[in-house]
Length: 632
Image (cartoon, rainbow, N blue to C red; front, side, top):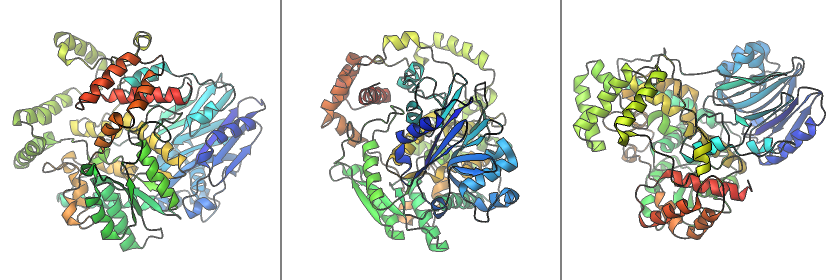
């Protein structure tokens, strides 16, 4: 993890070097190992370094080679395959990530991102052609933002705050984005909370030339025609294990200690166990994994160390408990949104405490299992495929297990897992949307109770009356027609999760730590989308393919019982106890986006009844904190 930024003047207007310097200073925390600048006649590009691997320490950036200039924030995986494919374009036998990206660009041009595996955001400036090419990895694990000023200047950077630091860039809040956010909507992903500043979406590339708006396009997507089928169902588990091992191995490539936030759940537990297994069997040349887990003395129902400690003991991992109950969740110093966006987790301050401890231990890369729910969780059923294949005995067993796990009646279960998928298969969501919308409106007129949720009562009249949010139709590849596959695809591409991922990356970066998640590996996504979805959820057990893949790696007494426990009681207490005055203070602050009286009324009711909290209250509270602390 590092950072980048740049300023392009399409004309030879002076000042781009000074602008790039101001942009770099705005996110100097991204460059604890150095900030380097390249300047030419029309452009200045800056790289902010955080060295994780040994190659990072000898990687010169910005990389200037044969007239091209590259800045990259990257970790390139499957390096041997890529290196063999671009051998003729390489200038060294020991290439760095930057060398590999530039060689890929020389071979494939603007198609090169599709050939890269890993986490990356990069920009390549071609002074002779006067064009900038940039790209971002498929899951958006590394950030990239941009702004165009009257077709005369292009700004780009890892953080929004870098663009705001440039001269003549006003910090105008996007009311459209705020209105969407307050209604718990996070699309389109290209939007930011500031007018005229855009996020390059995951799996997208950008090409900018003088005299026009940048062209952006999706360079990678799931191949709907790729199918993986085995006669022996155990082979699905073994194949999953092989791909997951590659994903974990790639993220253990480090010259410094690697950390992991370890809970009692499947996602982080699988990462820890696979890392321990790889260390034992392959003797990986990386420091031992260090784990960090929340510790509770009073709220003992939230403490998961009875599970996580079995894993750390098994592999002799240094385990650090983080005292969760001493953390102030809401308000300064650590429970405040970043300037880029008001969106933050309830537990930002808790994560920040863990990151500070990790940095004290010399950790430069921290692993997370955040995307595990998207790939193998989310309770996505594929009973319709079992029915279609005539596997009636298996279908009956699955329905019985699901009935026991979910507590649904068989009638509700059949409606949810058979009738609705059949209906969705007959008329997929993105088919004839122009006809679907009028029919939905007619149905809502006939059945008012089925209408979508109205805006929250605290949303200001100004936003209600002045902002008309566009309808967003997610484009699913035409070949992904079956219900469970479509659900999995849409879950993986969740706009909320992608924005939470961007928040996580910034939080880790502020502590000089790289954010990485094996569950965001493109190879793992491609595998999950190529297999029958009923292989992922079996016998009423969520994430069953991951549980089976960890057999003999996770201690057997905890493997089948891995279950994440929410620390929500900690947040509940924060709202009611030490932070209550702070919450009221934020609510009383004036802004033009939400109504203080309505927020306070909800908050007071919330204090007497913890059930069914509206997540939009937290979003509104974060928005008020954001406006207040950043003087917006």
